Length: 453
Figure 1 (cartoon, rainbow, N blue to C red):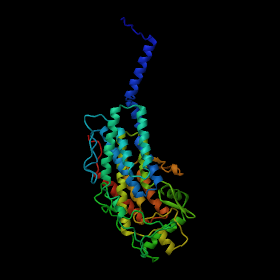
Figure 2: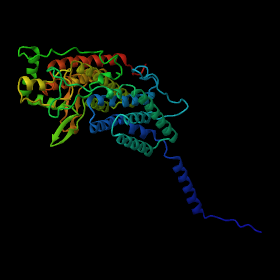
Figure 3: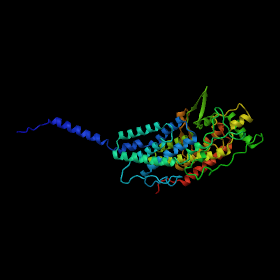
Figure 4: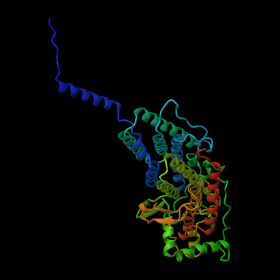
């Protein structure tokens, strides 16, 4: 029997080879495009902090809670990015309660900017209400990275390591007392005229009366930088306290246009309520901590900072803000001082109203003064004494850009805005500035994440 040879036309043979080659490429996935990946990740952490702000604002978190939400994801992001500069020290062993974090496998390859953002999103997801929105952010990130082109093994290693870091950060975070605080007693309103009580228009109950029970990030305790007690409550018209209240009253009645603009620019109260009929809703705006995280992100964009420097700066800013709120809230509920609105309406003018809506927590000290000064102290340490910048943080909320010759000058304006807004007496502002500076300088002195030489 004679076997016949089967021949394939040359054109068909070539087409078949092309198909096989394309199938092989498809099976292997896109090639690793390091240059385009680096371009994509430039500034990515700043953008993801802005996206996190959108979630925080929509979820209407209080200022103390918002500060906690910024801190943990940015710590995770730094721990994922720091291996780009191997001499960068870990925060483990420096932050309270954070002892050990997993290290990358020396036998595996990673793309650390991706590790950093995966750690960020996986931590953030468990700190907000709208976790689906964070999850969507991560899915879009991964899809875009795959479309750009990344080695599949490096991709898998990076995602797995980022998730591992996030898991350990969350194990640490869950022990900070945040969940335990909800089982503690609510704030009790008393008949003491000097003690804080709910204020108009909706007379909301006290926000976070046990925030000082949370574990600080770097401070020894919430009371470490206690600012001291406020002026003793008094209704006598010759008393110091009455004079301080009168200063608030007169300031608001005689505001000029610039002072009014300052009060509104630094309002940063995410819990402003409005009532129509039987329905109460909240006006969405950024928190004090969020405002300063955005300033940091904006400056990093201007500086074209690399991934590690960006992660370090945002982690430091998040940490100092979180500890500033823990410190401030300690004295707030110890002194539990009545707000100017309550005092003025009862003892001076029943028709008087502040420019800003009075926040639902005691007066002393001013949270914005403490947090702004702490953040400005940290950013001055990083970028210098005279770093001029134009603050565009409030543009999405309908307010114009304001320019400052330095971070400290911006923080001073944020502090005095509380007097212009009619929601703080002067000592709460002045002592708040001192308290914030003490917190900021302590974090600078006791937390090292600079690259060792």
